[in-house]
Every structure is written in structure tokens, then in C-alpha cells.
Length: 253
Image (cartoon, rainbow, N blue to C red; front, top):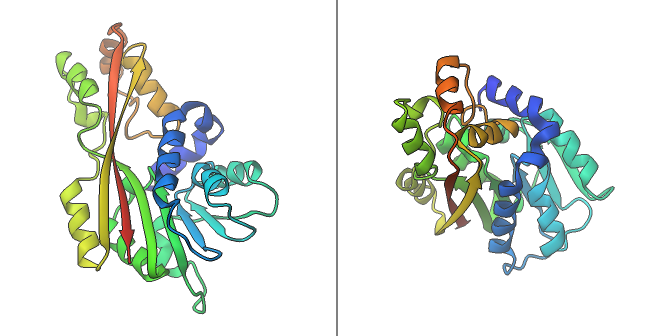
């Protein structure tokens, strides 16, 4: 994650829950993937925890106890909100860039049974190095479950931008590609199970969609500072239905 992206999430942290209904739905789907996998007192790491949605559903579905969930995020403000939302004494928090996983735990640390990440890994600057670090932190037989937006998302938005002669690459970051992700995980020896989730959300207009994305800190997806473009976008008054295509990965070490 770049410094500017981390700052964007810090700046928007107080508005995140108001603008991230979709992220909460995805976090619940992710935790349900691992619900039936039984571990005795599992140790869980959530990468890119945001305001704590995954931990919230771990408490609900996995009945975790004190000290069993460790949350990290590159946004200090997100961590603060997550710590307030959690039940007192239940969770640990740390401000940490996910790229630094290889040095964030003591040498005698025994590892995790479950590592999760919901809508965060797309910000990684070196996904292969991150997968390698995650593999090292997992017990044998442990689970790595994550959800990422796919490049096929937002096709309606891309078409709407093209219709007014605006290049969508300036507004929508390139997302993770499925085959590259599979290859990286398989090379580490993960047994990978995969499913796709498609969610549709209506927005009042194109401007409302971009503003909503910008509202939870995703500056690389939302409104930019091209005022000539924004004027054209604002004139688009038609309701727009957007498709979020998500890849859900369940990887066993």
C-alpha cells in the first residue's frame, strides 16, 4: 500500500462504516467460508482489518475468546475505531502495513490457524511476497481466507465513463487478476478453493457512485482532481446499477 493510500483511509476512517455497507456483507460471506472448519482455540489474524468487520463476524460465528483474534491495518485511525467497537478484552490491535508481516511477530511465535483478509489485498504492492509471508505464519493445515474485487467489477461505471469520453483507468484502479493469484498460491503449496460472488448496488447517478467509493477512503477508485471530468460526470443524472464481482479464496496449507 502506498503512503498516500494509507493516508486516504486514515482521513476517511470516521466515515468508513457509513459508506461501507458492501464491505460488511463481504466480510460476513468470508467468515462463513471458514465456519465449518473446526480448530481448538484457533489463533486468527485479520489483515487490513479496517474498522473490524471480520472480527465482528468471527465473534458471532466462531465464538472466539480473549486473545484469539489479532487485527492489523496500515491505518491507525481504522485500528482505533475497531478497538472501540470490539468487546473489551477480546481483541488485539496494531497499526501495521501488511507488507511488513515478515517482521511483525517475535521469533518464538508459533503461528496462526486462520488468516483472513477482506477487501484489502488489492492494495498490496507485492502480492507474491505477501502470500509467502502469510504461508510462513500459518500452521500446517491452517486456512488462509480472503476476498478481493475482480477486474470484471464496475463494468457499468466503465461504460458510463467511456460514453462521456473519459478513460476509466484514471478513476478505477486495476484490480487483482484471477489466474495470477492462483499461480502464486499454488506455487507455495496451498490447496485452493475458489468461488465468485456478484453483488449489485444501485446508485443515484455516476457522481454518487464515485463519491461513495471516495467516502470510505478508496481514493484510487473514487473522485480525482480532474475538474473538467468532474463537470461532465456531474451532468450524468441517470441512475446507475453497479456490479461488484468478488473472488473468495479458501486456501489450506
